[in-house]
Image (cartoon, rainbow, N blue to C red; front, side, top):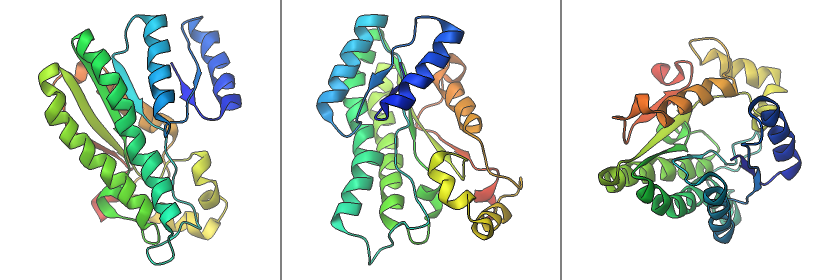
Length: 222
């Protein structure tokens, strides 16, 4: 049940998945900052599949080479990051948890960021939003464990996505980023997807409230 605000990209991805898995794919347009759209998406998902036992809160907006710092950020900047990177995680969980309780359990994975641990210079609102998601995950893990609902975080480092385009096109900046990664290269989306898959699976049935850092060793170097 993939969702996205970009319906063109969403439908392209859904068509690709159907080629592999058949008509078990339900693409839904979703603006994660809009509460009523969450309710509608969850209702449609349950109607098609009977239950939903995994939620990956992956939507977010990232840093760019022009991200505002502390003193030149606006209230609008702050709200934009908080709504997409933190409040949306709350909304998704608000609507999926009652469904998971009926199922007898489930797994929720919130995508935060290494920035929530280390911070990023010149990106204070972004860092705060990822930190909010990280802290929210901890509290939710304690609240929901009694319902057999596990809540964990994945904290990616520098991953090659469209959000990273501004960095990858600047060779000097890119070289600087890579120099700080012991493995010597940026990560790919699959490097995050497989850890998420593990946390969603029964193999991680005793993992709750954890933070899985996926950063090529960047955090080891400080």
